[in-house]
Length: 155
Image (tube, rainbow, N blue to C red; front, side, top):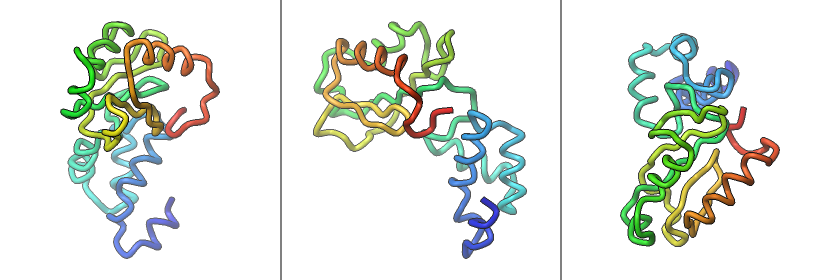
C-alpha cells in the first residue's frame, strides 16, 4: 500500500483505498486503523473520518461476514409492496447496522445502487442481487450461509 501512496500525485488520492485495506484487515475501520491510515496519508484522523462517514461501504462499526446493502431508492420501493429491508431485519432479528448473533449478517439501507432494471435490488459484499421477493431473499440467505467466502470484502 505504501508504494501506491508514494506513487500517487497526492497521497490523498489513495484515501479510500487505504481505508478499504485497513477495513479488510480489521473487519471494519477501527479507531486504531483510522489513526494508522491518517499517518500513512499525511491527513488528520478527522479528515479521514469525514470521508469514511460519507461512504456506505466503509464501516466504522463491526459488521457481519455478509453485509446486505438493501436499496432504499424510490424504484425499488415501487416494485415491492412493503419493505424488503424491514423483512430482512425481522427475519434475521436485527435492526439496521446490527450484526446477527452468529456473526454472519448485517443489514444496511443504502441509496440507489443503480440496478433499477432489476428492482428491488441489493448488494451483498459487492455482488448484485435483483428482482427480489421475500422468497428470493430466503434463498439468498441460505446460499450465503453455505457458500465459500470468495466474494468481495469477505473476511
